[in-house]
Length: 286
Image (cartoon, rainbow, N blue to C red):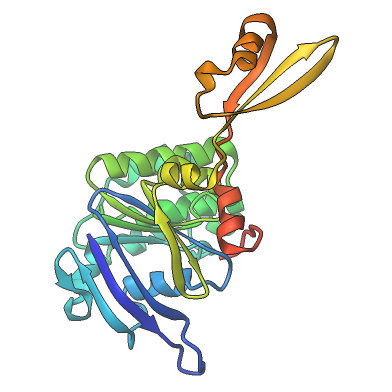
């Protein structure tokens, strides 16, 4: 869906490049995570891909066409949800939705979308009376109004309770299953792990890792097996090498003789990988 080659960008008042020659591809029907610390260049890259910024160097192809040559019909094909929801607060939710519907030639089923995110009953309420979570859900509906083929989602579940976050994640999965493609930025690594087919880690305007979450976990994780068992009222934790573990007599004896409480591999988490690869801790900033 997207092919980006040697993308570079410098803001007019800056001497140093914000984007420093990144290249990546996003396959059709893929959920692609674009991860990194605040200031790494994620938002800038997204703004370039959705044609809010130009004057870049390099090549960006969208579905086989150079985006620099695409007219406004491009915006009919994409949906965008920014991290900070911006709505007309003195209008109702439906007045907001109807305003944006008029911008597009193709419209999605609004009632179905609003019911799915739990806002249909509050559709005639002023958006200024909405909670943060309600505004975030309305933001997602707005991104889907034109029945897009490509979604750009920036922190789509940040600020949502687990139930509503799961609803949005299910909708994102269904969008993918129907053939849609997603460019996702998030600092919530569990969301990334659950949703993304591949992820790219960007630091200081450069991509330093790009692979599937599974492959990254294998690369950065330890090949060990940890088990916990009870003994004399205490919990004992032991760790064994994964190689030839089926021949490890002590490990096999523990499985047979002990009351095992937990058993899992030394697989790392995406959060650990984020910190290790980027060299910084996680924040919830864009």
